[in-house]
Length: 121
Image (cartoon, rainbow, N blue to C red; front, side, top):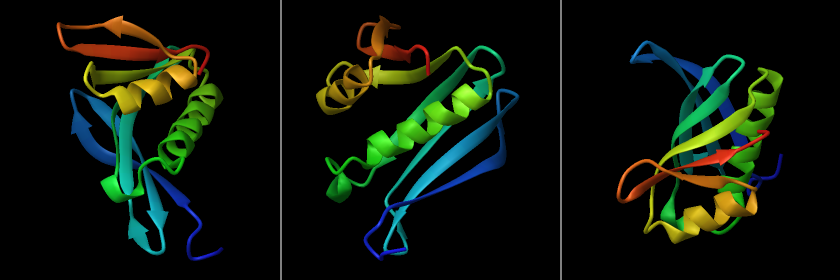
């Protein structure tokens, strides 16, 4: 593998949060972690992506898209009907553009937050 090629490491983390076991995807570049995404499966229903973050120096290089595509594949493999990105701020235009480019639809959850639903995942 080339030193500048992104590698995605995935793992179940046994951190319990509201009785959920989180699935984590970490993009690595040249031996350094450059981001993290985590969420959980609701079997047969959806994968809920609670958080995705990419190092500010590594944004706009397609790494966030690669992470989400990996999660979409895992969601399909688990029989999920949708992938839900939780707690997206209305001011996060960069992320919203990415989610909408992937076919996501906004579902308002509060005055300044939306969930973005990609169906099918």
